[in-house]
Amino acid sequence: MIIDRSTFKYNDKVIIEKIKITTPFKYEAIFENSGCFIYFKDRAPKLMTADQNIQVNSQEAVLLKCGNHFMELLKHTDEEEVEAMIIHLYPELLKKLYANELPKQIQLNECPVNSEVIVSKEVIAKFIESLEFYFINPTLINNDLLELKIKELILLLIQSKNVCSIQELITDLYSAQNVQLKNVIELHKYSNLNQEELAKLCNLSLSSFKREFKKVFNDTPNNYMTDLKLKRAKELLSVTEMPISEIAFGVGFNDPLYFTRAFKKKIGSSPSQYRSAN
Image (cartoon, rainbow, N blue to C red; front, side, top):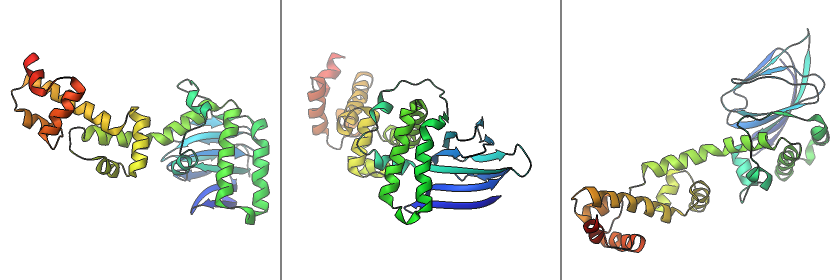
């Protein structure tokens, strides 16, 4: 059971919490749709999630990618009490903090498929002490300060030689949007939707859509989509007798004349010339 719990909220979401509990204890889906960093103070139980079984020592921390997971703390002795500091890493906050780019250590580091999740207590001790200070003086906390503490944590994790763990976590947290964007593009690659409409399907602003598209496909939306459509047009010109106007509409061009101009500019010949040569 929970003996004591104090929290700091960021935009109405609990982002840092300090709890004291008796074990055994189970949280169900408390870390849904976030990563979480959990630091155990004096005693550390066996920690179980839906896909991990971890023994953490006292004054050590664990970094987890948490979806619809549970966290179960198993007791070692009778009447065992555990005090923990939990920091939630929400994808939307990480994207705000790193709107332009992720730290270079994360971008450039080559990691194995599986990485260690236990974080050295020497590296993190001072950071936890700073959080304790704010729990004693909660009136000092605001959103700006919380943002700074999250960035500080991530930088400390990188410097603690756990760059692979934080890279893996952030990549996973970012991947949902990438998957959605890829799916939208795959489903609509031969449609006549414009960039604004594609951005809306991805639940992104136009500027965010262009930025995310560049990250995923390493190209601009217009150039990438045009290349896809013209590649399909070349196939249809080679293996079918479809009229050029039908091919233009079929691969997502509203105007056959614009299709012809775009085809000639990219391929070097008109659609009819390309068909004759193939």
